[in-house]
Image (cartoon, rainbow, N blue to C red; front, side, top):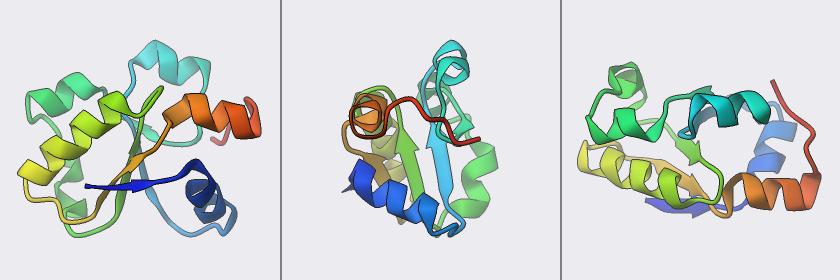
Length: 106
């Protein structure tokens, strides 16, 4: 698992490059504030119930949560499952809000 900074992710989003962005928070957190990621809560990773990610096994996947802890756990699980290019957003949404406020990307 690699890490990616909030600044690096923002630059990727601003470039309009296609990215596989996954939010591992809970649904209510996702509804309150979201930067465009697909919601797959951490609990689904813990039971290996992430079949929809299988086509992305060799592509870059960026995971995020509130602070980087849950997404780090999800990234470790994907590593075990054989995913080859998983990145954890360092500092999560706390760092995002610190740098960019609460401007959402949908």
